[in-house]
Image (cartoon, rainbow, N blue to C red; front, side, top):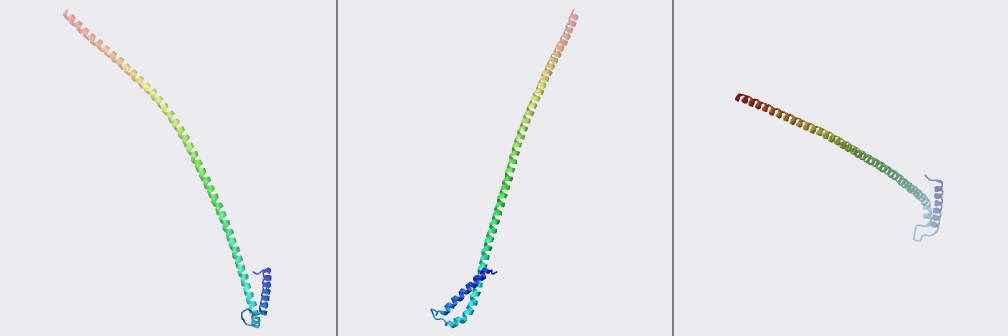
Length: 185
């Protein structure tokens, strides 16, 4: 689109071109060209071609400006996208760091709890072992006492049996001897 300023600029440039052409038509060319009348005849076509050239230049300028604007817009959009991606990457890294730290803390807490639990289990196991040892000692002492008492009782019984046997043997012998003595008498 052509704005007012550009229209004015175009008009001024056309006027300056016209003046230049008039001056050129009045002066003789340095190398031989067609004469001034021929130039004056071509003046109208020259002005129209100049206008076409100026319009083309303006269109080219507009295209260049639009390209530059588009490039700058694209650069700005790319920068904004890069910033967003960078921020997203930073946020993702923060999230992963937070998750990793949470998981590490949880693992440390779990390790601590497992250590505490293991220590408590070991303490309970030690207490149970001590109790079992005491029970075994008591049982062993009781068994030893009972064994000793049984052995003692058995020994006493054996001794009594032996004494009774010996007594019975003595009595038998005595009675036999008495009988013999009686018979002998």
